[in-house]
Image (tube, rainbow, N blue to C red):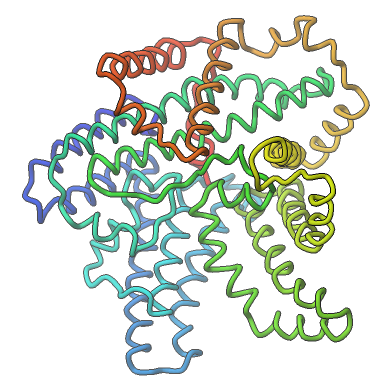
Length: 497
């Protein structure tokens, strides 16, 4: 029962009906029951037992850590429950993500959303250890925080302090909130059905038969893949945020116009924001400020000079973070190389900043300002991302390198007009619908990037215009997205992370 199924819409209507008819104090119980039913439909009793194990161990470890903090135990002692719990749960995450390597006879064990709720649980436990939050006294309330069904499968990754009060408040029905939530859900389905699914057809064809195409088509497929994962992931997040908004829970935003990023590091601040903040707060800062890296930095300042030593600590921490990002994306040398290259490019840019500053002053091309410089920086960032996505989308490192060779030595520009485009699984009308959808996405993101809010613009429009836009979106989703024979109908890419 994924977000793209009719069964989910039926489940959602029943869950919302039950939520709003029970007394306010009991509404969080309806959310908890609904979340467990939803997860049971997705992964069965095995998945339910695994998330229950996480909830039980985090609840017990949280109280253990709190009691040690209250008794003024040493930092080493207070780390014990946190270390035990994190080792067990992150160990489970690693096992499930790499089960095909650990136990080949079992194949890959897919637990929906395991990394998302594990990261959320780890953040909650670390916040208890540092004293930022107090542990939940009721294990069922903790269970709802970790299993809240809109965000369970692909995020966003929330902090306890961000959503706990909304989860347990028992909000009443609100027409404005419901309207905004429904609009966001429709926008999510528009991104998924009209754009991501059509893109999946073309991308799947090219990457599975890349030896049959020249570099031009491969480059086109990489651009389309960039659009696909954005529309797919952000589409699912918009559905999750819309459902939560109807209930009265404000989940954190997860995307901020990533295609307008002026650097690779800026892209990662805009893409999967909650995961980036999680790595920043729970991995980057602890590593960068650790005594071990402090000693390395002190030694390097003596040997290589002040500037190198000062930059070494954050650069090493950055490498560790993106190594973890690579592992999170999957297994294989090509995925690890993807993480390594991200860390290398971002760290190198930190070292090269004085040179880049002089270059910007001479050329008057500044990506942080409006105009040509901003456009140039965005296109440069997109080119870097497309290069990196040779590795993250390919089936193996060998395939990625062969595709790169094909791109460089066999460009075949003629494939843009000799009919090859019509052999990629999409017809003329599919391309028209797909390109129209891309134009809509970029227009919306451009408006948002300039500081305006599309929701307010629509709200201020005449009722007939609002109705026309809603009707056009729904008809496009149904007749071009759902019932198009050429679009690949698939679940969300990040649902298996």
